[in-house]
Length: 630
Image (cartoon, rainbow, N blue to C red; front, top):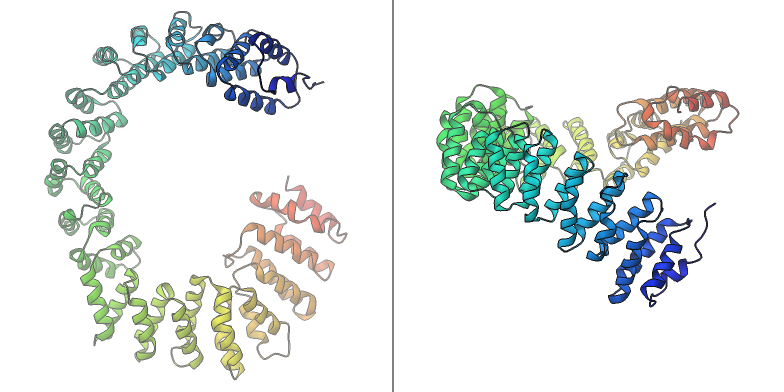
């Protein structure tokens, strides 16, 4: 049984005793087990961190002396960690004793602690450990720590390992030499690079880490064995010698070399260096379609508007729809009024192409915007005005919403009016809602289009309570006839709020209401699980509609039209409907919804059915479902 150390209060007290006393206390402290080891570790760490001068020296001596004990491995690792945080050269010998330990964890802990201790003694201990390293894994770990210390004297010890038959060890040695970065390390890596070998990638990467001159970087770029090397070499070359980088880029563009081609082109564009950009621009007209797409994308990513003309020329000459989409997408970022007409022409031929539509919306084309707004407001041809309307809608041109709102009541052409409604579905605002509510209330020839677009606008705004309070409730309660109210009721399934739902429920429960049938149909289109409680109430209060209400609950839980609810709410509403069901038949019918529970909601079903576990009407059936939930 674990015991609580009686020495803990003494150890954690403010230490003023001499080192011998601390040593004896720590040895006693580490000789037993503790119930709260996590707290103990925190307290010991704080004790060490807060100590100064002789007090700190005494604690370090005590911790170092305790290392050779027969403590469990995890406790000794913790003591090593304390020395890693606070140790000095005084602790090197105690830690070094573990460098050849049979336990890999202890060897690793000792190495990490030595690497963190300042001074030459710790580094020397790590270097000497290489001569008697128990395994290649240990050797590689020591390389890593010597590199962490950036110890130039370690180079001579590490270099011979570049000739090892073990490729992983060669890679570790090369990586360490690259991080140390001394002149003799680079010299050794150059020799290894010239000789080739299975660890060539690691050697190339290490050479780049040493900060080589431009000539060597250019060679590494030209002969790179992997994309990562080529990219890093080019990045360094741009900084070291722009002219040389330009020549290497021209060479790459003149060949079919595929290694890191796209990354190099993007790097060249992102560099902003005039020579590199000119190299890309000069090659662009004669480049392959693939390269033109790469360059155009690179120009776009870097916002290089001056190359719009090149991309436009490529767009005019390509017949491939995929390449064309890429070029158009790039023009969306760097294009101006010059790009508007050619892209708009393509858009008109295929309005459903999202790439083209998105690019058209992003163009910086103020002249096109002004022209479209002028045509929409004052044009004489309806088709031209509709085309202009689509442009300002797609681009969400500043002022377009206000203009469309005004035209709603000024425009007499039915075709254009319908298009105005459609535009407001996506760019309309609350003012648009108010205006369209007035139009719907008039009940004229465009009423159906106005209703449809008003519902979609309300769904997009997702402000159900505000829309009900400010627009639909006043309209419904001020309407003089049931026919007037019906114009708004058919829209209410787009106003997702408890208030609008309660209005529909009131009439759905009143069989004498002239609005009963329409409100019931509107409820059947509701897009969130809020409606389940309404159908549950209908099933309880109207036996003649019970079967229909249960079917609607099932449809709400399983139908694709319910888009505003997550699985948690669905299962919770399902369980609540069962709990409130009027009879056994209804309960059993509702249970069938999750008769085969989907794996992703089984845990929710187990959780949310707790309130109905003791319902004797459904005990066997519910248990069968829960058994499938794991």
